[in-house]
Length: 65
Image (tube, rainbow, N blue to C red; front, side):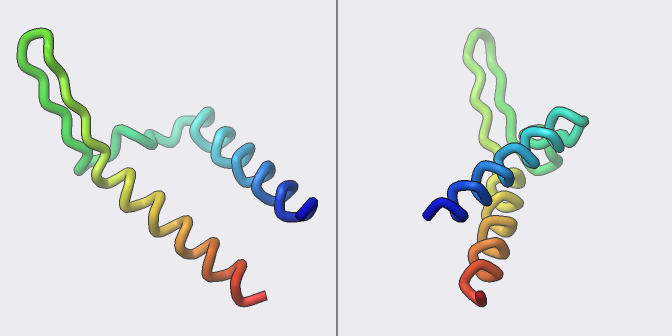
């Protein structure tokens, strides 16, 4: 359990560092933004797909151990 928490913490720190360095996560082409007057709606479709693929690959590699 301890090793898993360390790996998860390092992964979160790595993702934070990549975002801080300028990866436009959340503003990718395919993310929908709708604005009308004082109403705005944001749906991160491409970002969701990218995060899903990355997490699937991590889970797949983790399960092969």
